[in-house]
Length: 161
Image 1 (spheres, rainbow, N blue to C red):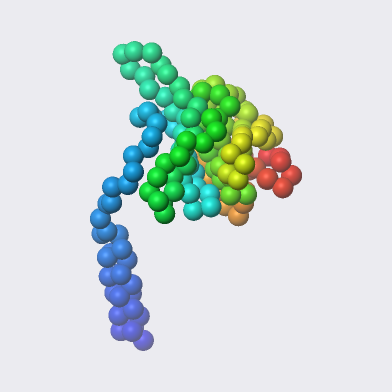
Image 2: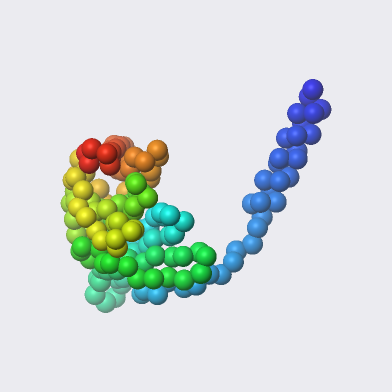
């Protein structure tokens, strides 16, 4: 029994190691300007990314552009702009729609991107004060924002936190 278990463990370990040692493949470059502190998400087998800013010796410029990546065609398409230029926002995905909020230009406001209609709509305000530069994630169609040892949960069915 021990030998069989060790053998199976070694096989799975080898398969996992092979999977992890894959090579990086260059894909199409984003059509927008390079920046940092942007956000992203995925829905309907597409990737989404946008917002962020550039700063340094010159002016601090925030962006509100939003981009969709299609892996089937390896192309980026610019979608409807986010309602405000901001950076350091937080994002998660519910109902196959990216949700973005907080950040430098907003306090508790969040907006949901409808991937089918290419529109942004405001959802309920987050209960955390100014949830920017924090972590967002999704589990079982619920959105979560973690900031300063506090966790807020968004329910899209009731549009409430």
